[in-house]
Amino acid sequence: MIGELGRVTGTVGPGLVGEVMVRVRGGAEAFLAYAAEGDARIERGTVVLVVEYLPPRTVYVTPAYS
Picture 1 (tube, rainbow, N blue to C red):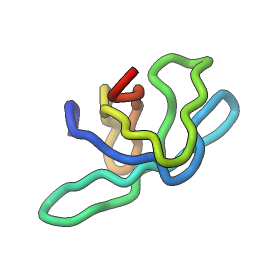
Picture 2: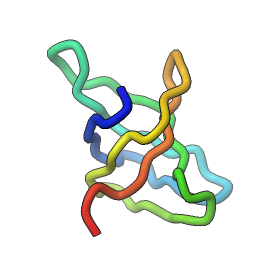
Picture 3: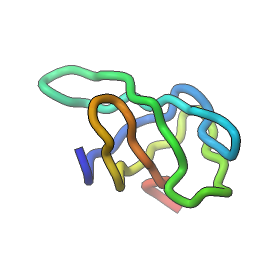
Picture 4: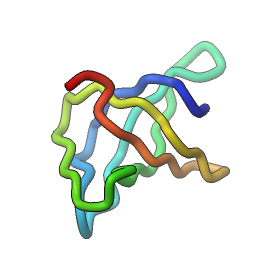
């Protein structure tokens, strides 16, 4: 999971549990998402990089492109 790219489908930010879709096992799956930088806000549609994975369905992400 770490190092995979995904797309935000529910805004990620302080006080929010966001959602990202990540391609895994030949399909796309939804994961609960938090910002790797605690005060960052990542809007829907942003391509993100998974930097931490907590099984079974939680990831910490950062924007893939600045």
